Length: 356
DNA sequence: CACGTAACGGTTGAG
DNA sequence: CACTCAACCGTTACG
Image (cartoon, rainbow, N blue to C red; front, side, top):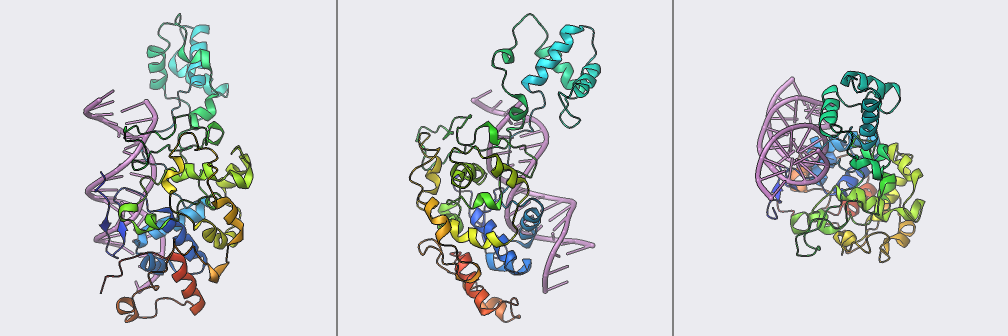
């Protein structure tokens, strides 16, 4: 597990098979694209396969999000408590009702739409397993959670643990499943337009940490978590308690394509030290007073060229590319000197620069 | 050569 | 609690 990362792709970049790229890199991909860098150049510069660049950019263009999707888990359950309750009601009202009739009624009554209506077999199973003995009080009945959101809370956050920072007990969760940080109101379906967006990212301070970029030991343990990091740390922009519907909505479609893009990067380019500790303490996970990033956000953005990253964070290691490697082929890209500088300061990948 | 994408081998996490 | 399965991942290779 811990040794699994550190594969090197054809371009010399480090990646973890099966795991998302660090957000720092993802952001840089988008950012460079916004600067007008061609995908193929981005690919070379960041040493990320062009397929991945293509994919990330495509997703960004489509959804406004640069963050990876939710990995693992199952589809959102369609048999939400509410649905079950309704099914039970139907069954009680008409014990002879067929599953397909129940299905139709669920649709007709608006309990479900065609996308989340349970299959007939599911309904049958529900009838068999959960409603078999109607006399028994249904487990759901008492609590009666709001079903729709519950149903969709698939992707709303990933309370990942950070083995490094978490208690040695091995308990996975840094937060309880019901984590306050994002809570139900942020629940988002697994479907894409989701949690992550550039505007959200603005609030992230964690992803730009050098270790994440460097890969190696600092490789971000769980990228999906950043979605929740978003939620957790972002509130400053929209609301204090994180109940920011507006933020959610802006998630779904990104508002501004580029302008704020250039600014968010420096804004988030901070960090580091304890990025994985964001969730470290279940206690402090919500507002995490220690997050100095909030104040930084606005102050240090340098549009386009000056992108002065935090020194400790980004040290422009890779001078755009290796002359010996690409330079002999042709000018890498129609970049102005300024752009080059911007880039070199932006990406700041601490790449081995070993190749050739 | 640049780029889109399917195939592939991998991880993850809800059920 | 081990397992299954379907989601996602990035790389690679192909067109």
